[in-house]
Image 1 (cartoon, rainbow, N blue to C red):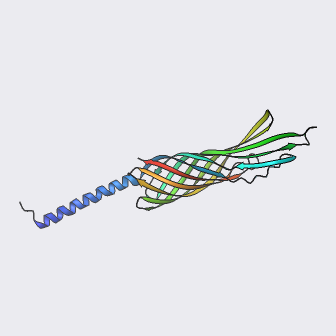
Image 2: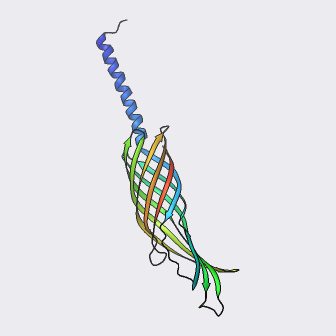
Length: 220
């Protein structure tokens, strides 16, 4: 039976509308929802220490970078806005010095001092994105509830002693990054994040820390 031309046109319009609706629904399903993931990279502590510890100081150095790790979960409201909670471990930085004490005892004592500072804690952020097809550029701002430990160790020969002081502070964090969505549910990103003034000035000292990480997330 021949279908009149007007019915064929109507049928075509209905099919096109149905396909558009299905595509929009699929896009909406991937544009919003929960996600989980983890990130791995490197942290950099701002260390400008002048360790004037020994009466005669022979050497001084520092290791201001370490591994940064985080696990996170969030909710993506749409392509432009999401909220995220994470736990971040920024690793530790170390400063050290060796030298000789001449004023504390009748005989000179040679020793080594090592100080380690480490920060970690929970973070809560909001992120705004500029999507370009499967690629997105984004900015982050949030709060980091940092727990910072400062451990000092003094050793001389077989003898050593150490002590730790801690501080809990809240810092405003910010970052920028880029991400790419693939296979509908997976998302990989690169991000630079700044964590300013971590620690307490009187207890552990305040230090800026930055992180450069690569992350992988799964969107439900």
